[in-house]
Length: 147
Image 1 (tube, rainbow, N blue to C red):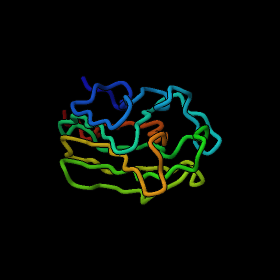
Image 2: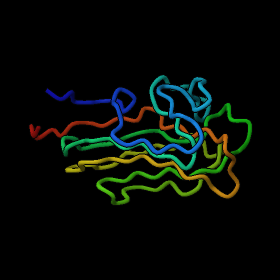
Image 3: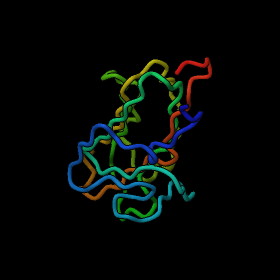
Image 4: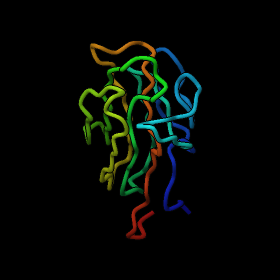
């Protein structure tokens, strides 16, 4: 049986495309605790810019949610864009953000999505060390009993 709610940090991605460093589970790409807008988060994914992670959902989930942003401990403003794709279609795009934007909540309908991709794109003002966080990234099961 599929749990009602699953953190993506508990799943193995089917696709990993990373530019300069490994994605991190429950910490930033520089292996520190995640902090966005002054609030620490215990669960999530730290992904370097120009990278993506893909997850196989098999159409079993209804909602994707996360809190995104550049980690507070990052030594520069940073400049990245967060993108969510479902079955190769864009579902959401943050626009380019900096650390000053703080924590940005994301909640999307992913009903019938088979493959979910989380992508981070480096902006013109960004650097290779930008610490993009997908804090509390999770998927919530469909409530209609489908499995």
